Length: 365
Ligand SMILES: [Cu+2]
Image (cartoon, rainbow, N blue to C red):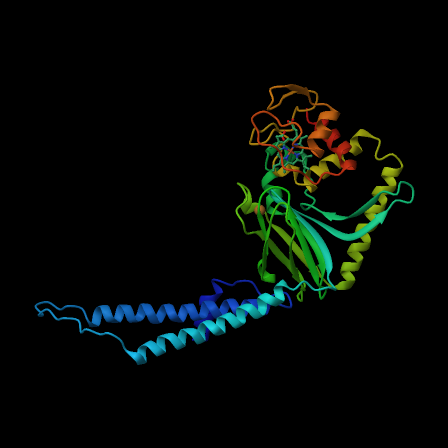
């Protein structure tokens, strides 16, 4: 019997609990589903039994239903029993809900921004340039998909990206608060194994917290329909041991420091290096989810042949796609909108990324 229930519930809850609270939430959900399943079987079973047992048989005389006004015993049972059951459900529901909603004070805060169709995260770990005083923090966007010539030509790029979205790393046994907002439409941040789900809404900051207790990789899904690539708005959380996390963090910060120093020295000067960097950002910042670079027409303008050509705007005006126009289009996408397209939502492009991106667009003749 237990294995039957486990199998039945297994359809609903595949995920193994992987945080301090997940077990409690799973228990509440399993309890409600289990009670519902039993109630369903009893009610439907009785229904089928009565239909067969009390059916009107062939040639049988008509019978009148007895006139019942009330039955105290039955009324007490069907009032008290459901009240007790609902009371139990309420208790287990509210007990874990209260804990889920109380953000711990000693947690690390990770900022998360949702957009069509990716998650961008920002850690509270930063480095500063001695020379320029510029600051750079660990940020992760889509997993660094490094587009190859082959994938660019085939146009398969966009599917490639959707398969392997943002992957971010956290340490086992630490508490984390995700501080979340959206730049475009309503999304919902959900990690099935963590048993958390929270709407991510433009103009609003919502929070969710967890304390991972199991090392491994866990899937992030968007649980609110948010456009035609909603189903590909996936991500991964990689939970590692504290020592591994520290090593990861040190390496990330060292790479950022190197970038800062390079920028302070004038940035990569040779065009090939700039193009390579631009291509990397195109993958890492998820531009490739929308912009093709092989000329494929779509719901979004292709980047192929864009540089140096005339672009018609929604206002009817024509502009030359030069450095100034492209810079503005990346940093303030709503300023000039290409005719025939919806405005691009704000993108997490940083000022220092514009130059390499333009070099990359320029190279797509
Ligand atoms: Cu979404």
